[in-house]
Image (cartoon, rainbow, N blue to C red; front, side, top):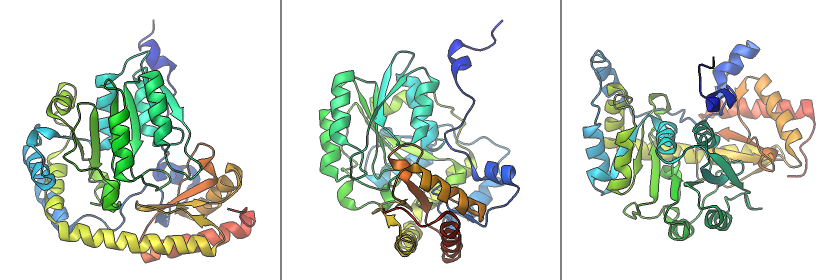
Length: 371
């Protein structure tokens, strides 16, 4: 007698990303630098840390299931209505709720081949099929291609990250607004803006731009340095945002996470300082790549995608050699993006460890291909 649905039994038991902890357990070697998960190693605001420590004393009690204070603060910070915001357990959690609300077996979603894989994970988990549009030759997601596929397939969802993960590239706001305008009315644009705090202002459409079929996702994981707290939010029209209340885990965001996010949001001076450190470290990381004979891609994120040239074999070999030297990095898993490695920015000591590991890896596996 089958205990689980036929869909569940058809799925592989896997995760979109192998965590550094799993690699450490497999190899028995702890990482000296953690530069693979796009975490902000500079950490959260001291005010946020203090608020979370204080809230931990009250962790015997559930957090506010309505996330009222944080939603109110986010609405004021963004200049939108309270009813335009919902809060959830990271963008990953919110994506899962959205797919649950919109997709079932036989439905279609559209994304870019090689883009953020957790979106695909949720779509497949609810029985939808995923249609892929290749990246452009300049390593940008192809907005024209996404529009074309959306008009042909009339999918439930179209996913776009701006700035993009894993390439770090970005589109200007006018291009994103054209995508918003040209999608079919029955297709929701999933606009992932996890890295928006690092992006040029010209790349972000006004936050007040609202459509029934538009949801924008932002997070405290990246610039605010709170990846371990799992807290993010979605922005949209009230009727669209309100749908999340039908399926979300109402106690999913802990009181500690809510307190930390509220304090972090209030400390914009610290946020600006953290972003400045990240931009400076990003330039140093690009220089390390250039001096190693590799080509760093322009980035509007807290990581740099580094083109190793050739096909994915060399990048994969190089990545494994870097990991063996105690530095955790990642690479895109889909061609042609798999010719790259992706390295999160870090402190001076982290980048020094990466530079040494990279040099040793290249000495071991051979010189890079023409990038």
